[in-house]
Length: 266
Image (cartoon, rainbow, N blue to C red; front, side, top):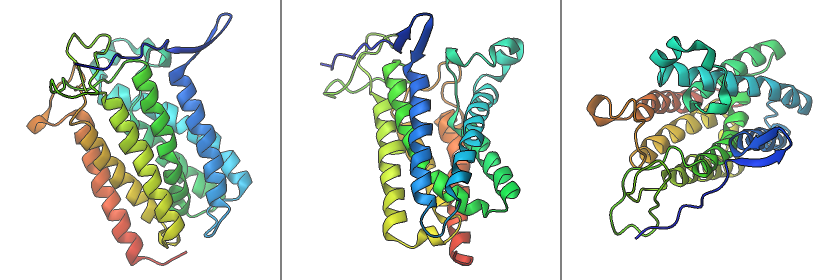
């Protein structure tokens, strides 16, 4: 028994020769909604940025996500292939983005922006990290719509298992939805509650640490159900690439929370 996979056209909108894909729409929605959310958070104490600075940072964040995400995929997942086919690196419409690379790109953007504007980079990082799960949620939904990054073969009695196009005849876990729930909805709600009902936002770096550690743990849990990349398979000790790349996030995130509690409040 399995649920029918909703075979959705990966192109959301056709306008003559122009095609807007769900994947691109997910990135646009995540950036726009995240921008508005950051504007709302930054306007409240400890006032990480002005509204105008948030507007300016949107361009920095966009470049960090796109360039970092693509280069991360190239270097972490298919370095040999892209070194042989370098002209395919900028062809984003064929898919292939890495969260970990995008995170490094945004972190670099935050550092450069904070130095240029004379702002506390950890306070900026905190409000950006609170908004990031919005984009993560939409991105995983787009993965599901595209029928990519599907899960491992499910137990025969799993009622919500699905047969994915290109995934063979076996019903599989809809792991994209698991990850949308964990990395997107649950992590975003946790950060909102910590921002709203605790004093963590006044400890620079604390919310950034919660995000990094929380995402790392959520990603490692979600990868238990996700089919590993075919060209990589299982790596050291049976871990996947996504799990191995998430270990440093957990360690760095825990270190940031520890340092925030030892530091001064804002």
